[in-house]
Image (cartoon, rainbow, N blue to C red; front, side, top):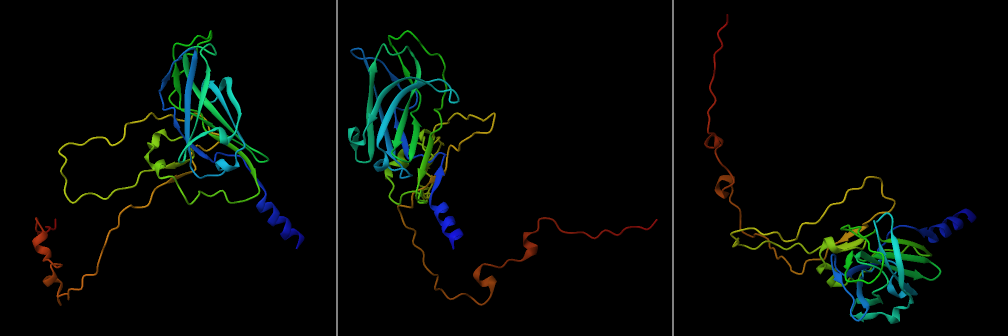
Length: 276
């Protein structure tokens, strides 16, 4: 009995140390450019809560840092804002945002991304990164020339007392409007598959989505970059019914029979072999 109780406790208390992706960062967009105005640079960071654990209500503070460099060697230049509470965020329906502001003399020109560190009191933290963007007309001494197309992988280290880390049942429908290749969370959203029309009217074909770069691993990755893909249910219904017509007695009367010889384009010939 004591062993069984211990097993139950172990099942309820465990350490999660992998990517769960509680948010999908949608801004700044990839390859965006920012320059100072009045000596100050403003970079708006926007994201949506994708419903994965931990939810925004579990997060106590946010820290925003300006970073640069390759994904496997992140160089955070400076902390832009720390101990930002959820109440200090701007919320538009289910889109949350915070504008990071810093002096133009903080750093030089180059490609950067913002690290979003979310603290969950008593449980751990999550880390996300915005897409890479450019800073121009900066007054800092050090400029950075490194350039890449993808941002670092999100990370989560959470100690929780529940096994309920499942996707929330309520999902913001706007998550499906973000292009798949621009999503950064490990729970990604695919568009709904539409049914074809009854007629084809197009005379030429066009690409529905732009092509994207592919980056291959040279070594085994330490963390998964994607946990699941979520697709929406159909917004339409397809009706069907039973054919109540009485079938004919013979298959040929129903158009379901044919004479095999009529389907042959070549006929078999008998060849007599001469014995030598």
